[in-house]
Image (cartoon, rainbow, N blue to C red; front, side, top):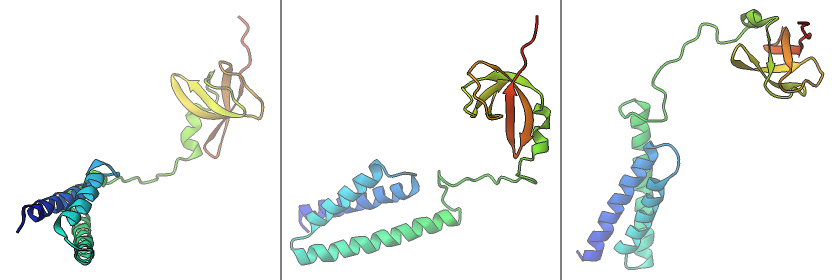
Length: 164
């Protein structure tokens, strides 16, 4: 075995390892690009002719398919922890937010954090909430009051000015 073939085999093995890392790590990044470069250069280092290159390329593709199937199988059966799979189960008895859950906000006064045209944000006791005006334009910084809760939307109007 020549030195170039030995180097080509080592480069192919490094390419397979980098592709395996890419399958586990979310996103497409350096391991994937490095793995592809290593696999392509490994094929060129090992082969002497076009026919040989085609056969080695087919073998590399088959090995990649097997590698992908094995890694996905390990991830599926939880033998291999993936950073993109949520481990904790999330359970809610009633995941829907009901309008009655927001009733405590009714008639609260706050300040418009953005211009309301008619949708924007308002600050109520230090909490930013998405709000909808009753159809009129309200300037940022105006005093507002929550008048109605409809379909989980907080409907507001400009608060009446207080006489001091």
